[in-house]
Length: 327
Image 1 (tube, one colour):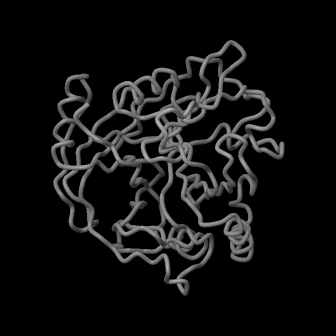
Image 2 (cartoon, one colour):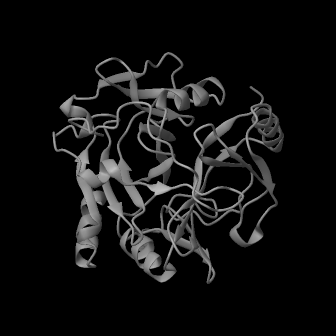
Image 3 (cartoon, helix red, strand yellow):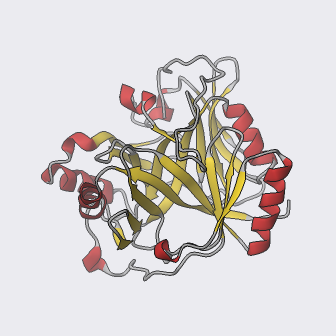
């Protein structure tokens, strides 16, 4: 292939109240506010040297405009344009937007209906990893991954691995050996993107990396003291799948954020994907606690890249049931 996708780099999504979002993301979770206006807010983690990894846009209702991947050079954007046009996909360009610090962007829709963006350049920002006086809340360090519910996981995995160069680190199989969920990466960690069986496409969560497990505990204390105890949906705990510590929280609009720490290196070319049985009690949490129904059923709609209306959702190809244990 004539392009090199480096990593997941940002998510653009709607919120209904920027001030409420600021209190949650900046004061409770510990994001750095790079810039804002009356219509948007750009946030980054403490170790990120780029303008933002989360762009919140004011709107009447929640929705996800795009998930964005960074690529190596401008020529790779052109190669991606040719590739997606050859697949008959919807493709458009956005000129550089200096107000939010991002360069020229290629916008496409993948076969599942997920709006993707690819870019090379983003305005730099101060890296605050050693600005310990700015550490608060969960002390969010950087964006790590996204997780999407799609109607056909096997088709999504085939497209991303065969056509875009992603690799599978772990996957979950049903009793008849159908792929229920899969974790795929470009950077050498467990995942940049995960796909789960369900009505979709929908964004299940955005995952952000923390420096240590105690940051999860500290975040719970901070959220409870600020009146956000009910926004803690699941955890803290340790996943069997990925081995990472996790905490799932919901923002004031219901968007789900995972705070995440402690997965492993996946860089070696002879790394073999780890298979999990869907009903293995260790995969949900290594300690055996079940996920709440909301975690399994609720997710945020993607928005059409041209109309900003919700992307049409389809029922899953596998039977829509709740496994005994869900990660």
